[in-house]
Image 1 (tube, rainbow, N blue to C red):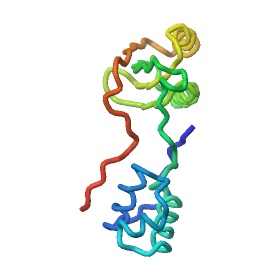
Image 2: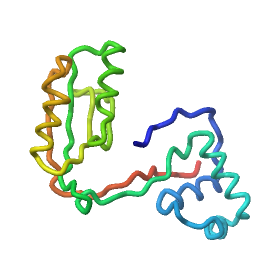
Image 3: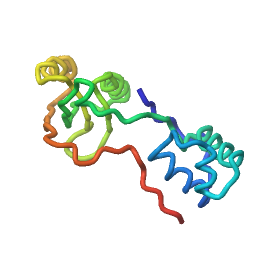
Image 4: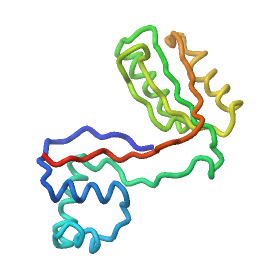
Length: 164
């Protein structure tokens, strides 16, 4: 599970940092030598910059995107959850419950719902069991609404990066 780390300290990102981030967001396995050539820096400079961005929480994790259909999880669902009470201890408890392996993404949001979840499951039967465990048995869940994804039009974890 990728945990989002809090930024340890603000750092300034220059044009070189942004260029490096653009490349590694799309292809983290790019060799340092190639990365250095593409951004016109030395390999050592690129390595130092990557290390600094990792240490400061700019780069949170290095992951591979996996096609869920090819690994037996063809159903993606988006679930909006509205909770009854927003007390801090209940909120932390529900955040922990919404961090299971079936849940690819969990957002605490404003608006009609309190949480938006992106869930990947092998079958609707599996989702029914998961919904009972996460939503029906929790007295703090006021309501939830499930949307079934019909087609993954775009899936990315890349953050758009624009120079100042």
